[in-house]
Length: 266
Image: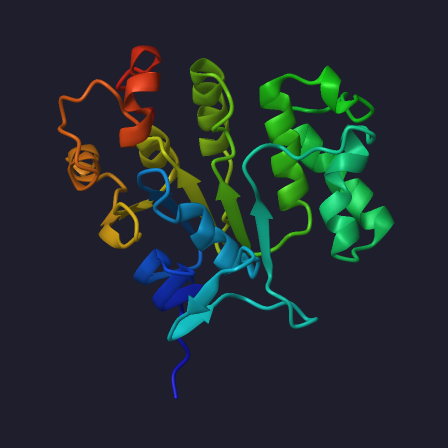
């Protein structure tokens, strides 16, 4: 019997909230070393999908699937780290203790976690801010701190739910460029990023999953690494023409189009 090389596998996932179907027959797999972006219109179930992968399905959700496979830790719990929308920093903790929250919950060694946290803060451009309070940090710095907190436990699968969605367009672009310079997945891990932003998806991911309107289904599964015409294919799957001024998914085009420019640094 052979073992699947995939790190994550989902087959025929459907999620319902009473009479409302949020996700319908969703199937995909993710290989080690992958950075996958999930993009689609508001309300199509992107965040619900991440929560299901994390084992944190929303209250009232009826989840059915032929398979939901993610790595498991030594304790039998899912070896995933979920970063929700917003930074969710604790205002009564300074930066370093905030970064350590996930490691403490995971039961990791205090001393080893502190050393790793300081190294991550340095790598994430927060060296020298270990004792800063959250309110003393800029929006971009807060998001970097939240990402460091997510990465610190060392889980193989990172689930990022619009980590930069609350930032202004310029700061978001700078954060995307910074994130693109990191090797978050590594050779044996994986990152799943939910976003509304086509350019963010194309810059950061090597593969893009496009979802339909609710009930959410995958209508395009595209390897975008060096692929000519990838942007046009993603926009087409979203129902947007290639000449559309806005670069985000439909519900944010009108709001964000004036501040966006069709550039791609890769």
